[in-house]
Amino acid sequence: MPWRLWNFVLVFGLALLCNAHPIYAETSDKLQFSGFARVVLGYLDDKNAEYLNYDNSLSIDNESLIGLQADYQMMDSLAVTGQLIGHSGEQRDSGIEWLYLTYTPTNALKLKLGRQRTPFLNYSDVIDVGYAYPWATLPQQTYPRHFFSNFDGLMASYEIPSTLFLMNIEGYWGYFKDKVVVSEREMEAKTTGFHGLISHISFKNWNLRGSYHQGTTSVTLDDVTQFSGLLSQLGFSQSADSLATTGVTEVFQFSANYETVDYFVRGELNRIKADFIFVPDTDGYFLSTGYNYFPFSSYISYSKNTTDYEQPASDIPIGLSPVLDGLAYSYLNIFEQLPVNSSEAYTLGTRWDLQPGLALKGEVSLIKGADNESAFFNIKDTAFDREALLYLIALEWVF
Amino acid sequence: MGILVKKYLACLVLWYFVFSTAAHAAQSVMVVANTGDQSIQLNRQQVRSLFMGGVIPYQLKAVALPPENHTRVLFNTKIIGLTESRIQSYWAQMRFTGRKRAPREFENETSLLQFLLRNVGATGYLPAGMDVPEQLTVIYTIP
Image 1 (cartoon, rainbow over the protein chains, first blue to last red):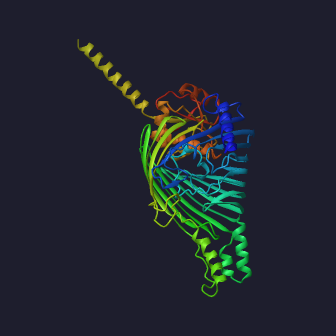
Image 2 (cartoon, each protein chain N blue to C red; image 1 turned 120 degrees about the horizontal axis):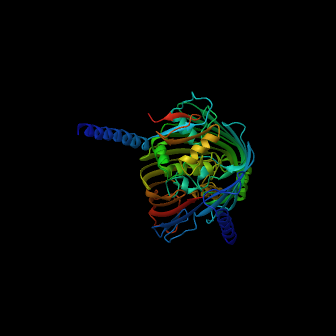
Image 3 (cartoon, rainbow over the protein chains, first blue to last red; image 1 turned 180 degrees about the vertical axis):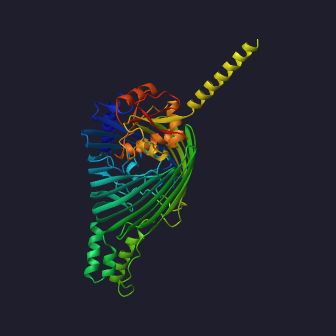
C-alpha cells in the first residue's frame, strides 16, 4: 500500500509540474504533455456486502487515479508515446501503462509498436479516462474488471474515407503476461498469439463498432495443475481435462451509438468464450440513453450479464470407495467454489460539464443478482439479498 | 415632405436588409480552405470527418476556434451535430488512445483567417457573410 500511494503521489506531482501552464502543456512543438485524473467517491447502501470494493462507508480510493502522457514527435512520421498512471485502488498496479512508437506513413495508415491498451470493447482503451464517457463508472456487467488492460505488440490502423461515411479498421497482434484476478483468485496469466480485428463506422449521427479478439491463455494455478495431474494418472481423463489451465479465449463485441445535440442512445453487447476453468462464458450488454441540457446531461442505463461455467465431468465414480468419494468431492468442490457473477444494474445519473476539461458526475445504481449467486458482490453475511444501491460521485479532469 | 418620407422609408428598408443579413450571417457558418483547387466542394459528412480527425481525399488540415466562441458553437450544432462537452469527451478519448489529435485552436476569427491565408491546406470555419479573401475557397456552406 505505501508503494501504491507513493506511485500515485509521484504521478500526481509530475502532473502538477507539467500542468504549470493551462491545457496542453507544450514544452515545444515536438514534445507535448497531457494528462487525466479522476476522483471517485463511492458508497454502497448495504452493510452485508461489498461491490467493486465499495462498502457502506464513504471511500475515495477505489477508482481514483491520475495519468500523465508524453508525446514526442521524432520525425514527421515517427513519434513515441508514454503514459504513466497512478492508481489509488489495490486492484490495479501503478506504473507505465503505455510505451509505444507510432509510424504514420500516410494520412490513412498508422502503425503502433510497443505496450498499448487492449481495445476489447468500445471504452476498454479509455476506461481510466472518465471524462471520455458520460457515466461515473462503466458497468461491471459489460466491462468485467478481470480483462487485462494492456498488451505488448503491433497495431495497424487504416481509415477508408467516403463521401457518405468514415470507416476505420484496426488489427493487432501481440502477447500479454502479468497477474490477473479471475473468479476472486489472483493468478499469473500469459496470453500468446493474441490478436484482434476492429471495425468502426461513422455515418451521420451513428457510430458502429464491431470487433473480434482471440488468444491462447495459460494461467499458473499450481494446486489445480497438480490435482489435474493426479486425476490423469488415475485414469480420470475427462475430469483432468476439465481442469485445464490453458485454452483459447475469444471476445465478440458490437456497439452502436446514436447522438444528436439534444440526446444520445448508446448500446453495447459482448460475448466472452473461454475453454478453461475459472473463466466463464459470459454474455453482457448495456443500453443507455441521455438528454443533454447544457451544461448538464442526464441519463438512465440498464446493464446485464450472464455467466456460465463448463459443467464438471462425471467419470469419477461415487459410492464405490471412500477414497474415490473423497477424490470426487475434492473435484466437485473446485466447481462449487467458482463465483457465478450474473447480475443486472439500473443506473440513473447526471454529468455536469463545469468547463472544458472538467466534469462532475453523480449517479446511483441498483445492482441485483440471484439469491444463490455472487453477482459481483463480496458477500459478508449469507443473509444478504443480492440487491444494493451504489452511489458514486466522480470528478473528471483532462489537461 | 413626400421626398423626406420616401428617404426615411428607403433608409428603413436598407436598414432592414442589412440587419436581417447580419442576423442571418450570425446564425450560419461556412468552411473555408486555402487550396489551389477552387473546385473543391465537400459535403457535410466530409466536413464532419475532417474536423473530427478523419481522413478525406484532399490534403486539408483542420483548424478551429476555442470552445466558448459563438462561431464554434454554431459549427458544432449545425455541422458536427454534437454538444461542446461531447466533442471535448471525444477528443479526450482520441488523445488518450493515441488515435487522433484535436485541431489547433485560434483565439478568434481574425487570427484564424490570418493562419488560413499563410498556410496551404489549412481549413477553418468562419461566420457566413464574412468577407473571404480571393486566395481562399469556400468549400462548404450550410444549405
